[in-house]
Length: 401
Picture 1 (cartoon, one colour):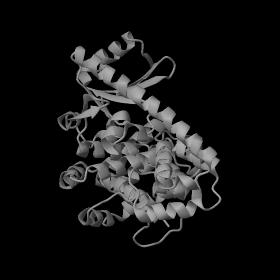
Picture 2: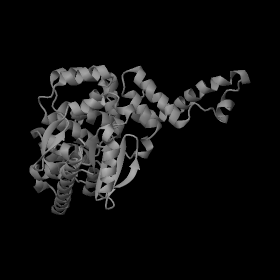
Picture 3: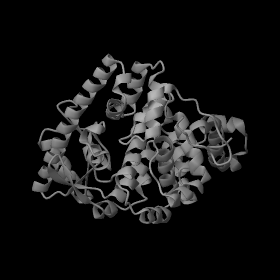
Picture 4: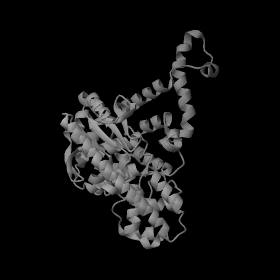
């Protein structure tokens, strides 16, 4: 049985369907013998293949599912289902190669106009961490440019046929021919309220060259890539298995990563719990190899262990992205930070975004006050709303009852 995260003080049961256990066995590039044996045992049971493939596609791990089944025990997979998985793998492979070629062309285009570009995630992560361009589902291309070149890069892409569909202060979304190619052009890897943990220069200073489809392109160094994946996964509340796979495969592919540098930077920038949460998920769900020293640090943060358990319990739930946006997402981000100043900043952003400082008629009815004390309603309203959200949110934002 795959061991799922436990809190240090209390063992909490988790119900997982056998199809989900099977997917956790397959969502990796390296399968140890005990996991392979357990996979064979699962395949002897009555598997709902339609559900399995639906969940695998949603979580972005269909290529890994096919590769693991094909290399471990293809004889235990129904022929028709193995054929479907192979066809999907081949289609995804064609798309990832096509996107890699597009990425190279855009990097070269920017270079010809003196715009330094730093691609990340997507095709470049598949090559660097998974060791195979075709083992990761890639939907779009993420490219970082410096702020002083941001508008120039936007204009250049627009002049070559790419259509702007959303322009944010830190990111611009482009499509080509409907949605054949989707590009996320960044002047910041993440919005400031998520990426304050690292300066803009940090990403550029950490870059290393990588051979992508026969061409040398810039790439984040392993430590910077790892930090980016941890921040990005926490930003999205670790809502897909692929995000955890990215962390696990990055750890697996970089056995000489400088963990002391990573931990020191995380401690200085107040995102150590974010690092711990990512590593706990990668270790507990996908057996990412970690040193004894790192494991001891993970065990020291009870809050990170509790959050890892909550994420694991929600990973295969029917909770939609829309249901965790806004307040639930902000409370999760608060739980994932160890410094009170970071939590306060997230809290204030939540207050301002949702108008929580503006008293309503319900507030006046809840506690009638004389007019000269009405200023207290600006304090009462957020307290009332936090009490309202506390109970239903506790199941997935790590708030203990």
